[in-house]
Image (cartoon, rainbow, N blue to C red; front, top):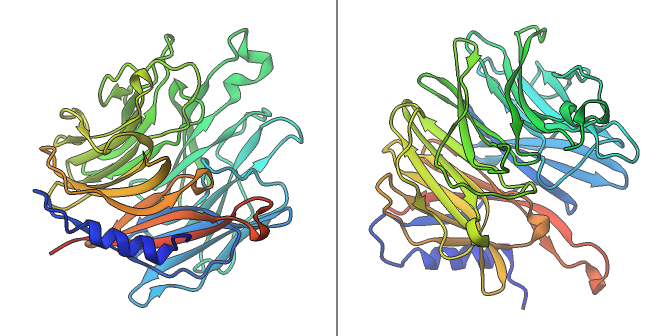
Length: 407
């Protein structure tokens, strides 16, 4: 018998009865109005609460949609944009963000070559609650047929938008050289009138296709990303934005993970004031592990890593910091010959609750997401089911759930 979404969540509730020093987690489903064929969810948070976005595909057309969390549930879905030339990928997720001034901004990817894996990062804004959207604009202007993606959008002081993304202009054949060149981490700013006010390089050489993450602390924005050094050590670094300038990246922890190719497994970061937590995946000696490390000085230094997973992690982590300085983390666990989305509570001292299995997942699940509003944690992921008759691609549907610590 196939386990349904509701069955898995019911089982998750039972798991939380396992005794543990840290409070256990309870999970319940949040119905979302999405059709079969929806996928690639992303979550963002504003003063109004959590916003979920996703992609719906019909034939060759992709559409970016979103909904916002309300006391009555998710709002009715609204559309941002559609296209037949989009680059849609399980790891490089579009997003919709509500800025501090109430306006909306979104991003997605558009292919720039019929045969090469090259695409541009497009942005669009809305001043009327998503009813209409501006013509797309870009933060990069190099004109190369290379990759520009894995964007993270955030408010900047004084109003306006900051954008970080992975930029492939250094991999263009005319400049790459024999080693193929490298991806860089770049930053652009826009004022309240959407005029671009700057573009700069944060790191000249980063991992090719690992998602990046940003968060705002009491001291400014911090970016977490997977670095890439000349010896192919690809550990998680953070850089801090202060007075309009980015600091040099520093390692959260020296895993010394040497890997020739991109693992497509980025970090997650969350903060409250000076408290920061970073979660990440590493696989020294081919042993998949998920970790979290806490900081009390705005991300300048981090404590010893605490293990998140239960045995074998596939990564794709997310983390949310709580008011008391503890955190809730998610990751993909490989157990009993299957992949599971798991969640647990962890303190800065490393004390953990029992993990809860939220759903059985597969490759089409992509990267599960998590966001916090008040004391509620919202989860989003893609659920896949076998096609009718057993032939063809799995049928995907975006699912959402809410998690709280048991009282």
